Image 1 (cartoon, one colour):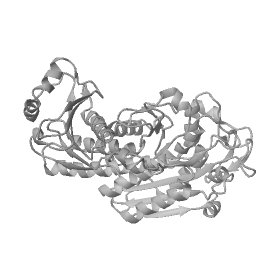
Image 2 (cartoon, helix red, strand yellow; image 1 turned 180 degrees about the horizontal axis):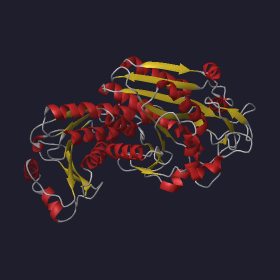
Image 3 (cartoon, helix red, strand yellow; image 1 turned 45 degrees about the vertical axis):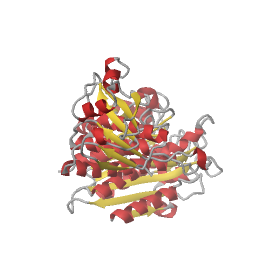
Image 4 (cartoon, one colour; image 1 turned 30 degrees about the vertical axis):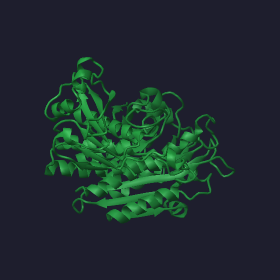
Length: 492
């Protein structure tokens, strides 16, 4: 379980827990309680700054032995040159929690001076992000070698109504992130479409939401030929999951969040190379983001109507799997030629986006680990954003920035549509290598005519193959934060 977070007003020099983390910007200067703390440490903080042993660079960590009668250890964490203070604090707090985890400490104090409510919320999220770990499938080491988990984090700043509310909302967002990362980290034989449906059902039960789950038979009755053609190669029952949160006024159009939920993607008949195929368990990170966002929204009791839609299955080669050259009829009625069975996510989303019409959405935001092409375009730093509506692009990019999940606008011009024209059907599911992420988004656009829509390609940002400093290798939680901030930004 990630750490719980509390506020601890008072002089930072009086903190007596296991680890005290002090966040300082570049060209650091000591003031207030830090002067008292430095005095208790014999001036070692100031000397470290003067000697340039600690410079306050981003992600810099400098360790000191704690004072007698105070914290067991003290670490200085660099914020770097601050442009986005909440983002810098979120990152530094995550580093603080990770340091506590490495040392086997059960508690940590975090101090960054007097910070406002938005900054308290960001620090809270960071502390929870940094304390998350997935050990469910590891045999515990011998008792003598075990390290304790971080259980409690204290933000040392003014204890006000606003800051207490910020801790509460930060814990809700952190819980959403933790859920999304846990779901993503689970192997595909455990995190199945049925497991995602059961998780959604649990969220709905705890937070008073409405839930609808369609299986194979129900989707056949709906005419969801695009989603079902992906599912026809697996004996697992596919699931279409619809969560409805009614926190706003009756009749208000809902913000609708859509996630791709491929619990494992082998590529189907167009099978992927064996190298790193195990990472295809992460092909459900869009769905994980929807569920994480709904966990946070339910906890925060946001005054807005929100719908969450997930299309979930696995993409497997078998005697019943779809073949290149097949033509299927989508839920919307459009015929789709299958060029590449590994372009399956857009087939699943086509029917889910069509199904979204019945909710009369104010806007639909979908997220999917959709294309390797977006990784070539943007690397692992930014999510690709696609929409014909510039105002939506601006809104989503701003939401991602607030969440610490950067994104970048990509073209969605009609010039690209010719690449997905089919000789025998209305549209084909792959336009080949050129502009692969754009043609995938163009394909989705064909099923979204009745409402405002924006697509997030998170293939490069949903998980990391290396340690990112603020979090370990594995799932990042993206797009959970973007979803949450987008919804919050729509509250009037």
